[in-house]
Image 1 (cartoon, rainbow, N blue to C red):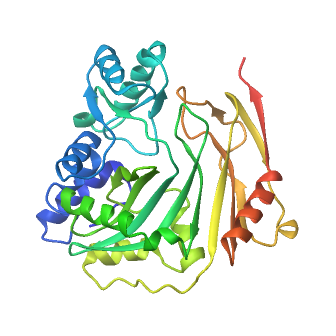
Image 2 (image 1 turned 45 degrees about the vertical axis):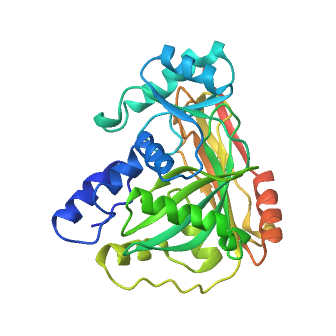
Length: 334
């Protein structure tokens, strides 16, 4: 039993368990889906965590934030894609931050609705370790380097995967991932574990018990030759997983977002003849689509570019050149 959709993770796991098929593990899907539960289990296991508390009102959130110190991050308990996640920098903004996070929570499952998680903000770059968990054994596959839009929101604007990323050999990062999976009870799954690399060491932001979304699986194939969807299916069926790396390169993508609320008209795209490492580029919206920036709307994605190159340096340069040739035409809302 396999799903790539966050909202169906618990149901798919329960069905697999009921049929005696390989699954995330008893309760493991909910351990990943419910971010408050994730935090509690990882803290109990002694893993480094941001300070956190669950608030059921703006007043509770303000009290927690005053204790932690600003800035803080507010987020729903059970969504994905950074929807409803917001940084709050001062007491003057805490009521609006709580409204954004708690309102977004209603989009998810009823058991995850209401209230918001308040977390200490930790600075540092964010990566994801994508792994296969096979009968409780963790196999790290590749590292995802993430890029984000401007604060106070945390929408991902792009990712990079390098086959020879040094983090694949970082003992502290890998042990953090393995210990987290043990604490959450993961048995059989593809996982996408987001980690903040702080001055004090790696800190888990969240554990997703599914294949990464966005263009990540495509980047992984380009950079490493690993087919995440096939691996996920093989793990779900209890079959031997094909973990052979057939490529050793680098791949990246960048999303071009709307910069204002309005009507999307068109996106200018880089031309292949001018960009030798360009793999693909295209629009993500149809002309005439209404777009809105957070918190009024999310995922106002207008177009994308994907590049692949033999080295990380060539890949970074190719992506920058491709994005420089992209622009978005939006008719502003009145």
